[in-house]
Length: 55
Image 1 (cartoon, rainbow, N blue to C red):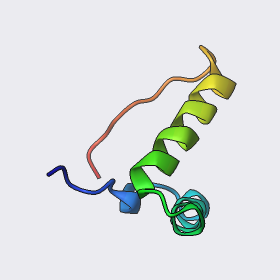
Image 2: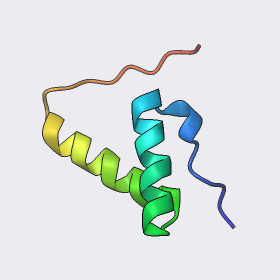
Image 3: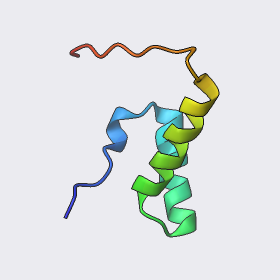
Image 4: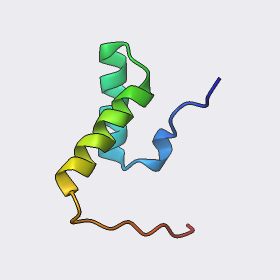
């Protein structure tokens, strides 16, 4: 079994949306997260860069 999607790494507004969407649809939070990340990446296209840094 895979671990659940780590919602704590998402910004608070997105975290709330993920939790609410998963609860209202009865789907795993992973499905809502995949949809959210897909939509954001589609909107950004090649116009955004991500740099991962330690916290």
